[in-house]
Length: 562
Image 1 (cartoon, rainbow, N blue to C red):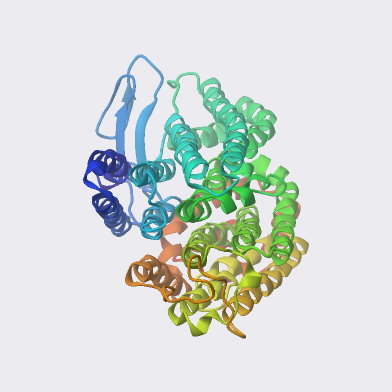
Image 2 (image 1 turned 120 degrees about the vertical axis):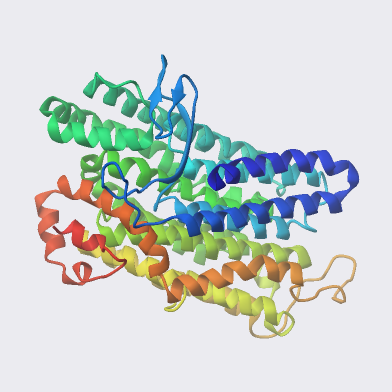
């Protein structure tokens, strides 16, 4: 019930925001922040209720998907989620497992700073802005919780609409061009992805002719795996179509990540988006692409993932280095953070396509870490822009003297972004690199240069803007005097505080987070291990540091090398 309410409540909140708009901006803000706080509280209930050691009473297997909701589109569903009816098995099916748990919580968390940083920044048509933001939250939570392919795709596409209007109406000078480019780019790729998803459904109906046509993601994942293992004809058919299905999935998910060279829509969208849009775009929306690879490609077409291992890994490594070099060349703070997202998301894909336990764990954890650190960076860029109305790096200097609280928060988030031990970026990057080192030492070694470049551009940004001689741009209406410019207020501190807490929590005690991922990741690793090429199996088995790494109660590194 909590998960269903998390999806439905923001949509209801959007209607309430529009309904109370006639009572003034203050009431609109109250309804919006109340709604996101309740949704975040529900996400804490979901996290607390998820039991990674739960076992299904009927089969005796680990119960990976929990807190399920099933509502049939055609026919009916019994209490166990089994469908019966004349039409295809399409359901409003929600559930949470170790893959989606923290991404759902991240979506709910980042809505808090997204609303708070818009408090004073958005004055024009504020009710519409907050309503779109709440609708976006429904779509984001829904895409991670969906257990039905049709429902997943509906939420997947729905997330484009609110952000399109947020960028196109409340963005910068080139907002309309940025919004159109973002929408067309991602829509074109997602259409191909939908064809790949339909191919999965139709292929399973052919391989298991006695079964009803189903769109259930868990049923398809387990059913196709079972057919491939027990039916030689199905195995040959699936081997033939898997590469094409992978390419169709790749088309939409790679653009969404975005993976080099499909990243060209991202920097302009970030720069032109309002601060809240940038926070949600970098913090959550980009994760839909990497989540799609983890949810569909790795468990459903594992052989094709191995077949495209070098292609995806090379693109991820290029993205890591290329994004970091472009970030170094920027003189606009927001552009720098935007290109850093291209680099950091490369680490997520590098970990996932290490195709072993530590790599996948690191990739998933890094998705959460990137959402926290980059979301906070965009929020602080917006706070600085709200004071001075410029993002030019050269216009600033020595701001730590005037903004000690902002300087402290920026320092913590910057160190988190570059992977300082004790902060959240460290365990994710270490696991991703170690996982890829087990699969391909060259790719892992080249990716390490991205960490060095990341430290370079991040610390250089902090040094140029917050240290040295005090230098401020003129505030509009005050010449070179700055009587109205103050440090972070209580609202802005409240926006950053939960992110800072999680930065330390994940950095100091990552096992709390990885232990809830492990059962679901173990399942994917076992599928990948069954079709792993012999040459890679030998290299991974001989890599002692990875097999000895304990990332949870049941390390997938051990499973990957059995």
